[in-house]
Image 1 (cartoon, one colour):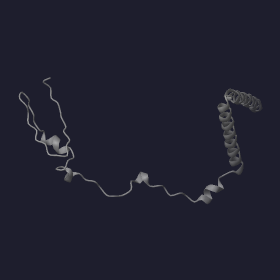
Image 2: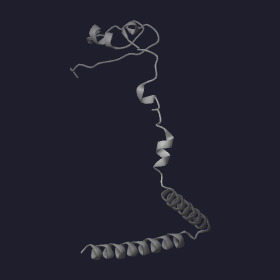
Image 3: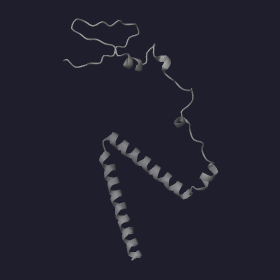
Image 4: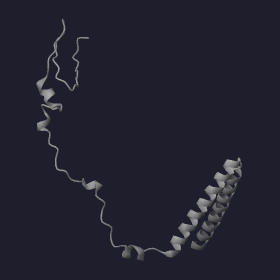
Length: 131
């Protein structure tokens, strides 16, 4: 109750603050000067009107050098994988709309298990070849 409290009053009109009976009201001029207002706006430095460095798109290097590094087989594999994902998503959505979603999920799980088995088999062959 007897502690200090800070009160910030924002208004578009000039205000006259006066303490009521049994109140102590003081305006801290140092703190008031730190708040931006019509009277203190002259002290605010706004800087130059430029685009910040992090908003400027970096220049791209020559695309000829980049294109030379692409392997067509890798691109074909990536496109094939994306098309497979698209088809799977389409089938899942179509069956989910018809209420047949779990069949697609189970088919995908079976395919993943099959691929894991193939991976394990190839890993064992590789280890056997190394030793």
